Image 1 (cartoon, rainbow, N blue to C red):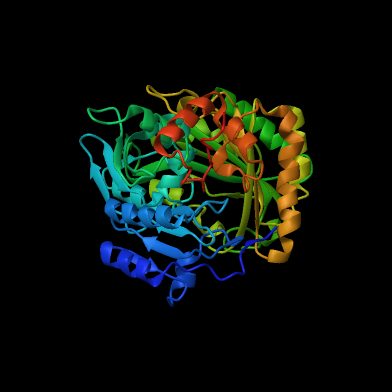
Image 2: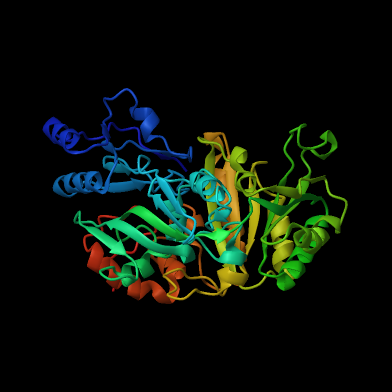
Length: 478
């Protein structure tokens, strides 16, 4: 499946471009500019689109000006934070890409344990600023991901069991709405608590967030982290996953676990040559608390069998957050699809093991995100995020390099998820939703009982569905 466009994008009248350049502090890039191809590129190599304009916005007023052009010319609008939307929502054909990368300031209030971060900030940038004070906001597991897309869609990461999802820790947001106004989502005087509720998991449906305010928590700077690579050949995958399931069932909230099934890469610096090409099960867990306590609690994950490799130990939290960065380079091809499971039954484990052995690409993985602790319990004020009743999120992460291999890799991910559908509780994690080809039924599954309330909020803030390149809530739905 090719998500490409070979056509030349429609260019707005030159006078419109000239006026926009004179109005904003940021930069306007057109197809005629020499750096157009560099600026239009996004992380997922499957996505190759040609916008009419790329507007790199340095302020909320820049965004308002760009939206005015989009409304006048009736152009589609894509919003780019970190540019890592697997589904390609960060760009579009023949429309305007509003690039938030210039909005990359981070301010830390260590006394109040707050972070104020621009809409173009990445988790790596936020981590670095907060860790200077021994603090962190729950984010993802890939440091170059933008804070915007991950937070608005939920946000599972290495701190979820202890401190909740990224969206749970969003306290306030500055938002440019579809009509160009500035709104403050929050619970203070003059702020909109309903908009804050919607931003906590409701996606980019209601406006463009120019500033996030997060609750920070004491983490690190050094943490104890288990990252052990166990053999997955034969029946070993089933055995390791059953052990990990039972371990997670009784683990305290200080344990933040993740299991990954895949194939050992031919990297002699990391793995002995005898292990290259073997199936593996990685057991990962970050412990939030005293180092010695973490070593004791997590020791069983290492000792359950002789590992192929063991990278566990005491390490800086920022290193944990960057651990997988090299495995997901810009320009590789990605198709990620997920399913929320009611429980990790033995039969489900057996099916995962079989399907994992059938993956067409050695770079692909099956990921198991256990939902426990704070991520399972909605915080005060809660939000639009749905799926906390699930035992885990299972992700089929198809990763490959050659465009001619698109079809078998996408099919593998879809078939794995379809086969396990009978074991789902019916909810979905929309940040890992393939290309969202199921459309509105998937949105209903993803938002569950919150869907009608979200439609009402969408009608209030974006009745024409200007912001539709996202996990879209169509305001026309009954």
